Length: 268
Image 1: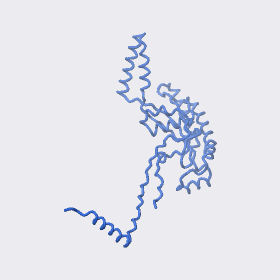
Image 2: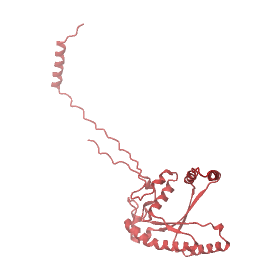
Image 3: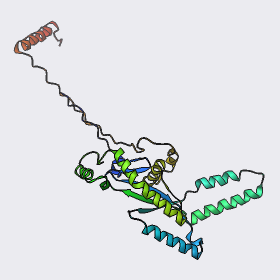
Image 4: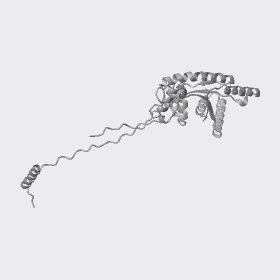
């Protein structure tokens, strides 16, 4: 009897990531924790006067002293892509009505290309990560999470419950930080679900420039769905050998062969 085929082996790159889901402007981790991410603007500190610099330092010190919860400062440096800017300059100098303007744009475009070739221009973005630990869900649910490490899902509670408790815990902290940053002169805002997806897509796919234009829609399913399937080996069915002829059938067959030879004698 043929053996039933074993199920295909499926694997996904998302199994190696700590992220369970991104929704409701939050990042849900596989252990039941959650994070809220703020993007913070920047100021040119060197261009400020001495009094303004002292005021900024004092306000930043007050911000740090007012924190009674952990935060993570994340600075992401990325090489600046000026392809779109150079293309804009190329389209601008197409107008032949002003040859002087065309020459100035050409010289400026040459200057930009030489500057990028000579020095590496970086684009810095600043993020503030506010965590929510799964231990804050309660002792019973946290213990259930620890004891269920061998299960397929590591979430200690329903994902809706985690999101609701995370929002209740993180939203007041976010409002406090936004208010304090405004005193420093910095604008901070919470990243939306789509912005979070784009951020992590750029982090895990630094060389995927062409796929950047596809991240303009709202996603309800995981972006990474690449799977590796391995077909189970096919089992060949061995057919039983035919039943050997009986003694009477063998004598009858031998008699038929002898009769055929007598009717058709070989000519020498």
